[in-house]
Length: 241
Ligand code: 1GP
Image (cartoon, rainbow, N blue to C red; front, side):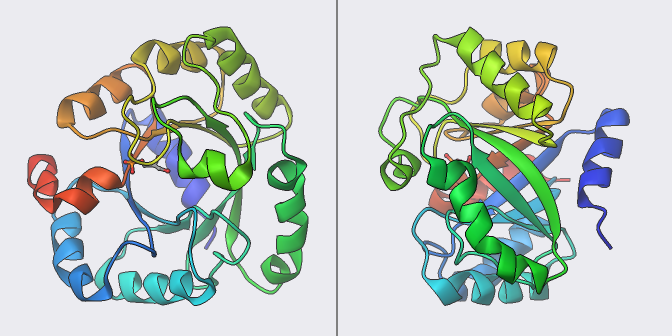
């Protein structure tokens, strides 16, 4: 049932805010997973995202299978590369790195992924992915050989997001990078929200409930948090249902 995107849209209509926990197959130890998932299930988390910048071919598939044992929440692939596709997940963010100018990450990897995707029944969600300067060089920048957009160039960020929407993308992802020192500024989120008519995902460097609420208040429809839970899963306790 390909309903993940529709459910995001209907949550927005109902004024509900969404939270995705990002699990990186490269960092999560399978023996830690059951305790982590127990806390996740007791929290307000609505989605599990799985992905990372540098992941072994089999690791994504193995992790998705394990995560499925512990939760009924939708599992969405957030792939750093073509090898991070698993038919065990529910949906795939088909990310085009529109902040960059590397053709491989705008369209090249997407073409390479097609033979595998045609064999699977994943819900494909075209996503305009914008890397925004989070105060330190991120893995995405190194791997994709692109530069992030400076936070002060708000108009450029807005124009890029709007171009993504006009190209037919269904989501805009404002990404400060995993473990960013500076999260995407509230003013950037609210400016993009004012111009863009598709759901907005915000992630990178969000470590507190206060930052999470600020992102929501300024227009983030779905927030992604990875590092804060990886470093200390007691953060889930602050986000109990
Ligand atoms: C990274 O946006 C996600 O791709 C989450 O970032 O790990 O900093 O929470 P953090």
